[in-house]
Image (tube, rainbow, N blue to C red; front, top):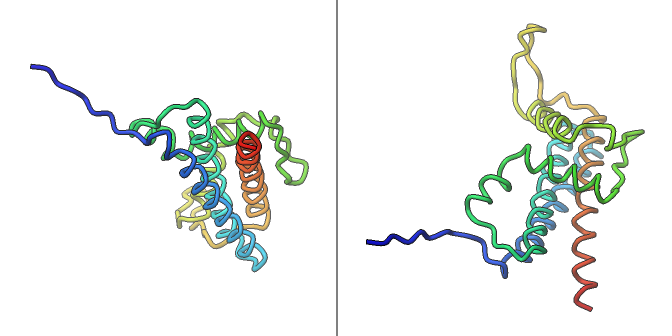
Length: 177
């Protein structure tokens, strides 16, 4: 008796569509973050900025598979595309590799370890969303008390991520001319 294993995957012909949908969603989230920041809702602006960055990371990952002409298996999707830290590591690394400027004060992306930076962004994102109790300070952390620095940092990264995936899209369009 023989058994066959069916591997579910996203076919190559669907990757361009997934890339575009993810890129447009990143742009939508970034625009909402900018509106919230202008209205001084810094915690929500920072959160949406980080979510925009993660959507750009997803688009960049999809792009890699598209360029390599590889389907994305369900296992790969779950491991690489749905986990926050790997997506953040991927986009931070790509921003650095492609020399995209993160326009935030004197921030130099190359001064930071990629994994540490990704973990910090995930930690900050959680602090801006969830009420928590700080046992050292013996007080509640307030997710509504985000600062302009938090939102500016997140939005700067989101803009850099969107610039990166827009660069991929332009490169793709030029290749078809």
